[in-house]
Amino acid sequence: MINQKRDEIVRATVLCFSGLDPSGGAGLQADIEAIGQSGAHAAIACTAITVQNSQEVFGFEATSHDLLLAQANAVVKDLPIRCVKSGMLGTTENIQALSHFLRQHPNYQYVLDPVLVANSGGALGDQATLVAAFQQLIPLATLITPNTVELRALTGSNDLTQATKKLFQMGANAVLVKGGHEPTQDYIKNTLYIQGNIISETQCPRLEGEYHGSGCSLASFIAGRLAQGDSIENAVHLAETWLFNVLSSAESPVVGGQKMPKRF
Ligand code: PLP
Image (tube, rainbow, N blue to C red):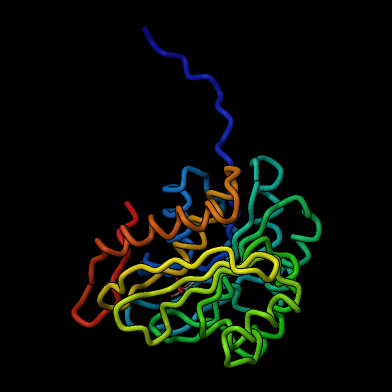
């Protein structure tokens, strides 16, 4: 007998504003894979097409403001979006487009990964203008996930405690400070703050090598769990455990290249 499949309602959805990385390590592919692993569905509004591999960024072309909003508005109509996640936005116009979109949908949770450069060091937009434009997104975010380089750039403060304090003064709700760029040799420490208070500090052993798309994967997994109703604290802890396993089995495409997280 043929089983007639009934229409099914799509899983809780995260709408990602992110760029295409042709290596598949970072950007929208990282988002789709991480959100899928979190149990949610990923929809994408593509912000840019980058040209890069695991070692170098050669350039990018950003999507226009109108095309970006058209993509987002098209999927709003028929997907159960519970959370928005942004990664590479590339231009001030795209940041403004996202800010406009979020103001129209104040019920969406929002994870802001304030991407400025690729892990290989290549620029993914003009730093100074991105930093200035990010200011309008900070008060709209449920959670911001800066590494310490991004935290210092966003706030202009070198001291991490002062920098985090400044981010809350700029309107942040919750901040996950990722310690991977700090000179701790054997371990990495992440600190989660909600409304200015330290909620948790997690430490994991530092894995050898450099990883392409680790930040995108972490932020997207968190967004996927938030979309399914987890608290910020639970979503962050589940994502940290998941990411550590994923990075532990990462593969290097070439000698000296950054490792690609094996997300499934
Ligand atoms: N988004 C895009 C399109 C990228 O190409 C990159 C890095 O190459 C990132 C985001 C940030 O990646 P990571 O998670 O390594 O910080």
